[in-house]
Length: 147
Image (cartoon, rainbow, N blue to C red; front, side):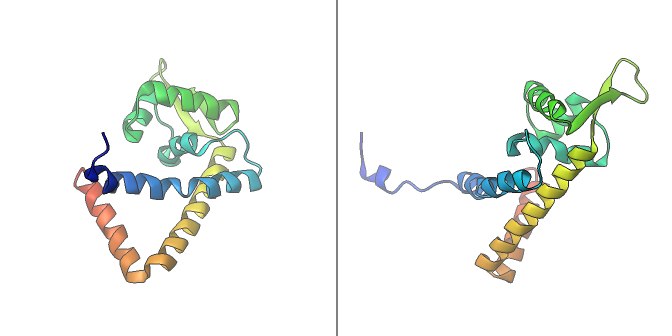
């Protein structure tokens, strides 16, 4: 089924964005290891970010991450096993439990932020200040438009 069109296949912009984002994963793994943060994978660590403002119910966390409740349950279970999060009572609903960061979870977030800033620095160096700023503004615009 090979055709000339196959030879000219170019990745879509969303595919390129995924590849660019994934390029930071090896550095994040190394940063976690250097900080002594074991048992955490970058894919799970993303679940920590919405918790920085306070504890959330699992369904709210799933909504904010735009993933299934099952995916959140699996990530939270792994994060809880390694003391990055803890489930506690909901302040206003005795039947509900909320997921909150532990001090170790907050440390993981600090490592993630530092790693992300290092990645941005490399991108800024590659693109130059103006192109980097334009790139960032375009991403913010796409996100705010509901894209």
